Image (tube, rainbow over all chains, first blue to last red; front, side, top):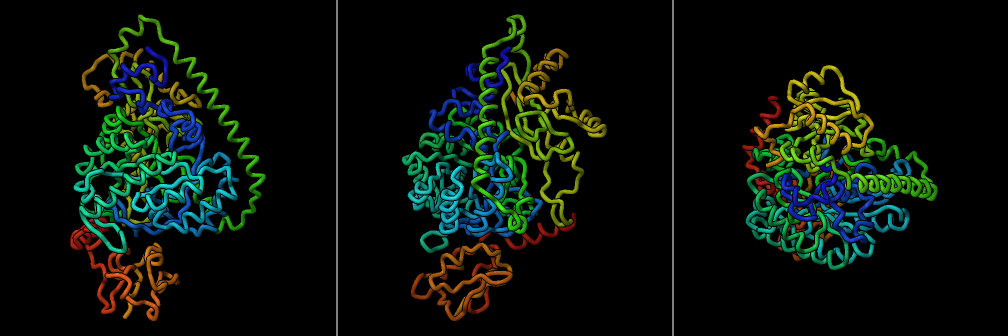
Length: 503
Length: 92
């Protein structure tokens, strides 16, 4: 059995994930095939590098409230402090307030490496507010990477300006390349001073997105493509989207599940469009992975999120709080540089260790029957640093890894759904524990630093083995160790009821 | 001859940026239209710009008091379906 946690030298055996090429989305190897100059740009970007997201934090500033299109998964009315999903914010900021907030966060959370503008509308439909923020930040906080995410409609007109502000990462949300499909996702766009609807609107949007993608690539600006997986609408179609955007030079494709609840008031939510199951998302990501570098660690964060992916420390930096903070940014930059250097050193050490481990294999006697063991999904509670270091009861989300005879690979995250703890009119009434167990569907073990007596019993009853034995260990090593324990215990001998992880 | 913004406005700024007459201003609770400045985009565009980009049904009224974007016209959600969903949610 290979001890590698990457599987990068085992591509031909990686059929479990449908990864037939070197651009397999397995874990942190997802960026390994990229040219050095691109890797240098993304090594500390939590949204682009799976490995970096355990260490580096990001923030969004909500300076862009206006939008120029309507998507069926978005409701422009909804604002709930307890909710976390794209397009939701607590307060819209002026560029001046945003700059102040960014400096306050960068000084308080030195591992914050990236500032993005992602809404709550479309950043490029708010060009003055968006570019004023970028202009000031690139001058006043030059150690922060700037990025922007857009629906693409106004993108071709903004490429020059983006290049001028040294923005080297752009995310375009592309849900389709066929106007027939687009007409089912976008009810209207605002274009050339008119509201345009239906297929015609979708056609214009698609053309602008594709043109913008080509222009950015031609300028050497990195492009990630986001797609929302909408079952029955664009699920099969996204495979074609993935091929096309890769051919045009996007370096990463992030397929995200639709979030649709009636209480959000969105078209899809109210009309009963279902969201995909975690396994549907994984299947599609695996299907696209043969052609495209896939991202699996996206948390679909709020347009005002602050902190590591999966955490939101926005409450610590509300407008009234940052007003009272006195930030010496020159001093903060010194501290930030030291923290970033320390993280880089840790990552380099980790990479060197992995390189050593990758060369090792178990004795042939153990390796031969290994092919018979089925893959297993395991959930991990972590609060960052790439370690099993979070109490089960404190986890708002779990990272899911697949262990198989070919190694360990990162599959995605499962959020413990807590849309709203507020009033009775919104929010699913169920205990946090029931929510966690539901979120862990399909997983056979959950690794955490500690776990209480009650959840232990309930998890076991649900067929999920709790495991607190690997507290503070690196995640991939812990998952591999548990997999080997399962093999030794004879739990993986049979292929019957083969988990869908091998589908 | 002027359009009007009412309380269902969500303050998204979209109309401010597209108004050719600079008639829309930030105000408490929500944006408002200066009736003296508003031309209903007559002579500039074929349709009032604020009403053409506003994402909220009912938030902008035409001069005759009717909604520029009536229920269902922007989201595509039939009004009766929306009411039904809201009733279901409240009954939980």
